[in-house]
Image (cartoon, rainbow, N blue to C red; front, side, top):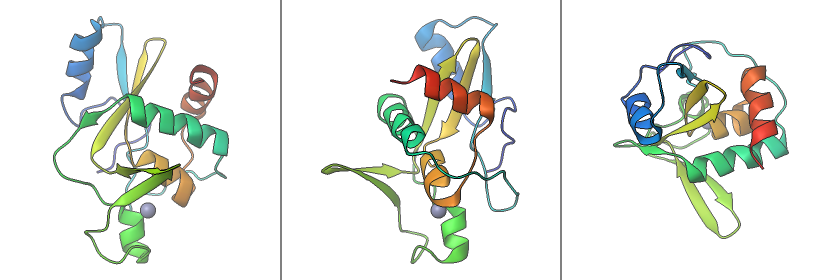
Length: 143
Ligand SMILES: [Zn+2]
């Protein structure tokens, strides 16, 4: 599922749910971040551990559970995982967070950024570079 970074979100009704939940007006803009897939090139950068920590906080606190799991297309393509049923997990201390079934959001000013939770894995394992605006906002806002 590919959507360009900073394009208007349209994947599910998560934007409508968020609007209702937080009573957000028309001035809020819902944007896609991290909806990359193996059919398109994407910008790369070295991962930053502090940024990843903050992304994990976002994943744990915000989420829209979807039915089923998305697998990482890059891992499948490069055979880094054995088969299409292998799920992507993140270990944190004693717990394991399974990625691939959640949309996460991050609100900054009038922007609400929506990402697949696999964005964490894309950054950590496939050097995906989120847009500067998103990166800076997360670094500044998540403590
Ligand atoms: Zn992968």
